[in-house]
Image (cartoon, rainbow, N blue to C red; front, side):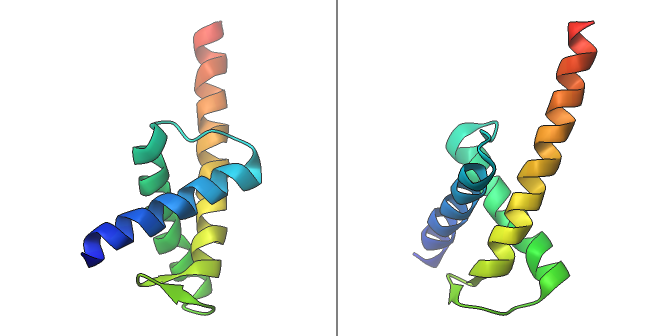
Length: 86
């Protein structure tokens, strides 16, 4: 059950990152889950484990890391779109 809870929390974190930046994450709900998990790892690696913890995610660093990840992904996707438009 904790794995399902982690998937839900990871998806919500990825969804919040997309909302904060106003950009869609490719892959729909699966993209949100992946962005939440990778962003949580990135945020925890950079900022540590501080703030409230839900389903083994430190929420504040996870959201900050997910926002950074979504921002970087959107820059990469935009660069690829410009390459294919030529």
